[in-house]
Length: 176
Image 1 (cartoon, rainbow, N blue to C red):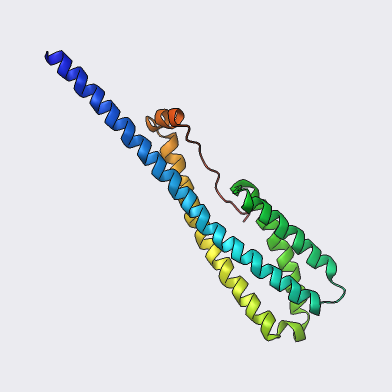
Image 2: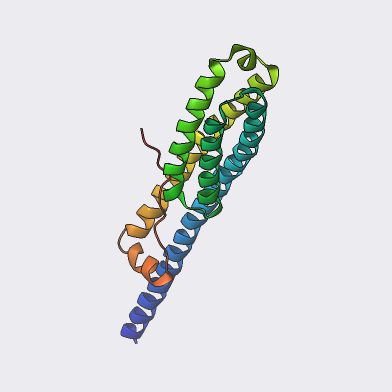
């Protein structure tokens, strides 16, 4: 009789542990998804603002179409990676976009009449604000990914993760 009770309690304890571990892994995965959604919202806003900025630059920067084309291609790569929720591909695409924007801003700074245009100043300020928000949300996303990956890789949670089909998530990394 006592052996039966001990076996029953061991089974109940194992089931409770499994369910608790499973729900902790689900919560970690949801934090990653929520963090990505928050980051994605700002990336989408920046994508829209960049379209406006490129249009404004196109009207003012005659003969500099090649730089605008590079910015457009970089925007497309970022959009594709963002749309696929591919954090591993987003990092290199972001680097390409940042390089193209740095060249564009250098050209704008060499054109004082355009650099001081109120519309240009307002859009650059808006883009800077978005970049700051993206950096903050990227950090939150990477924290959630790190927490998720630690939870999945820790034993005995790794057994529950394997059975439940949980996978590690890639961080959103940028070159230094």
